[in-house]
Length: 105
Image (cartoon, rainbow, N blue to C red; front, top):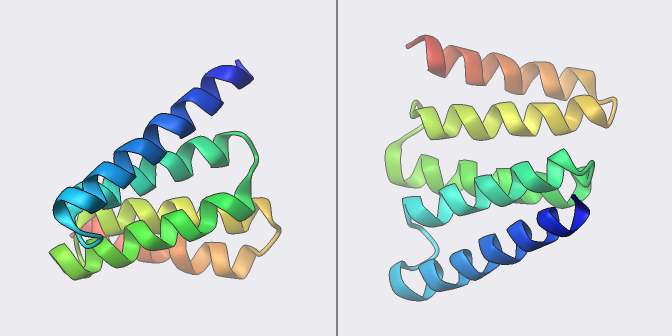
């Protein structure tokens, strides 16, 4: 199974590189690729590597769609999960609240 994770990460990285070259860094497709890669890393317990990718996804999504878009909520929830796993419960709670508030709207 570990080999499959590594293959998935490799494919996400290639996809990000291609999308950045074609569309630029600030593109929804790039944000979604960062989100996918972060999710794979998080699933492996590689939280320190996942967190900056969730943040990139969130930042690009805010820039492209505004602060109340579902992609922003998804990235916030992912960041919250990372903080929870790191024992940073207050940070996690704040991000969960943000994600939930967006999804309720």
